[in-house]
Image (cartoon, rainbow, N blue to C red):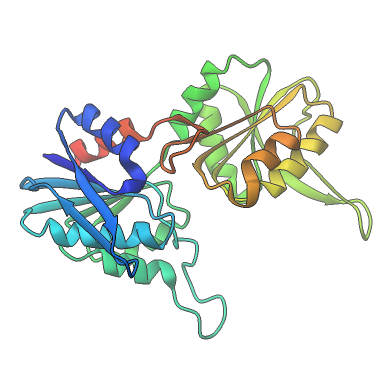
Length: 283
């Protein structure tokens, strides 16, 4: 087995190769004067893993080109640590594409299996023309929370939609769990607070699959401090941190911010490599 990576998942690919004890293939990338992408990779194995997060349009094109370059491989497993466009999973308005479907169809050619990590909408997996699965980093985040050595920890989902994920994290680290809800105090005033539990005297950890701009979490952090939280931390699988999101979180009263290496950045404090390796070995 060999591992081949786009430019956007080099660190995670090296960690995956270490977990699987297999070869990581070097790929050369550059742009032509008209900004078209050129790449040249090494010889694939019969079983080849191509790994790359879709974080922008270039990263998507790199994946398409890598899959084509590895056409001699008998079995290609495509790993999508972060699948951009997956949130456009249906037509919200007339005339819109189902972007997640378009991306999945394009990436399916010559691929035998797809592995995603905490894909935002599970039914996007059905758009691929090959078996596709999503693995969850909830237990990995739970381990990371335990190692933070917090006191009287409360795991919070940012909304009811994240309740199952936050509960899985809480189960993994043995902490209490709740999710945030908006309570309207008046026609213009809204309070964000946990649905069931008091945060007073607790170290609060807000967990989610994606942190995009961080605006909602920064607002929630300020209110949680007002409600007596000892500290507030933010942990996610996919750290996008668009529009200055990382700085917004820290300036909003969040003591620490951590994400996985599905999107590689200075905030990447834990890795998806072991979980992906386990899925590859058992599939």
